Length: 325
Image (cartoon, rainbow, N blue to C red; front, side, top):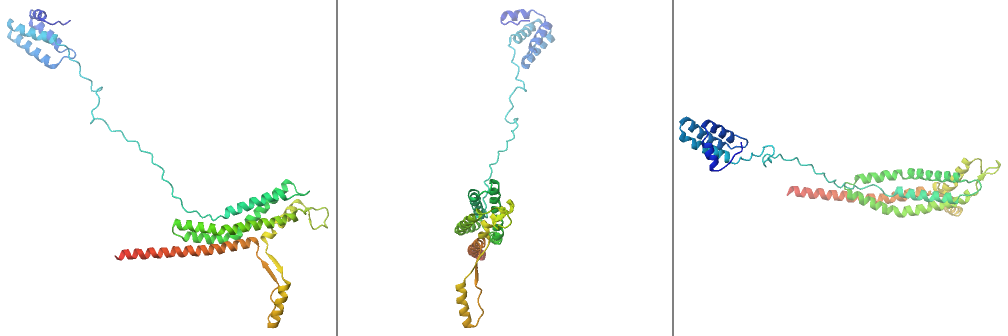
């Protein structure tokens, strides 16, 4: 039924029986979206009218029904499902873990005194010199490559053998130093002390190899068994050339001094003592190299150990004094 408003609607409903009015009122009051308060007023008014049975009560019932019909329907409350949750109902979102910044790694002192760089520089120079300077009918590119490799391999092995005791001594001193700054200072002093010795040794090795190159050029493959300067095969050719190049580097040089021998013999004859040996020898280039490095290391290592012990004693005495106060 379409509802209307005004006095006309009220007079029309007043003429209807009470039961019909009650039905209209209940349908209007309890329809979709009707408020409970309006329904309670309509039911109360209609019930009073029915109990009294008097016609005088009809108008109030009709008026109440008309008011309920004429009242605009209340808007339905927002659904709880669509209502935004309150602050107390909101669940806290778990925080994403922040990526940790990588911590810079502490740089520790390294034990590198320059042996590797020295050997690499000398080997590269010798290999380039051999490939460039060794020539002759018997020398092919393959034989020059092989000779250069044999020379550098032999030099590497000789340096390893000569420097092994020195490296062990350096390592022991380096481990005995307690602080990283002391280790770094020890390595720095060794590199500085070794630099001049390495430079002189590099020049000496290259000089001996250059002298040997003149003799290598005279070697060639044998055509008869009578020639002592000829090699019977390529392997022997390479071996002889290697000996000529490194003989002055690996071997000690011994000399006979007849003048010194005669003077010593005359002097010893007067004193009645035995004659001294007439031969004297100069250590090889590699042996002299290792000896000079060892002397430098002994001086630097002794100084560093003394300073480390003195600092340790000072710190201990200072700590004991603070403990007694």
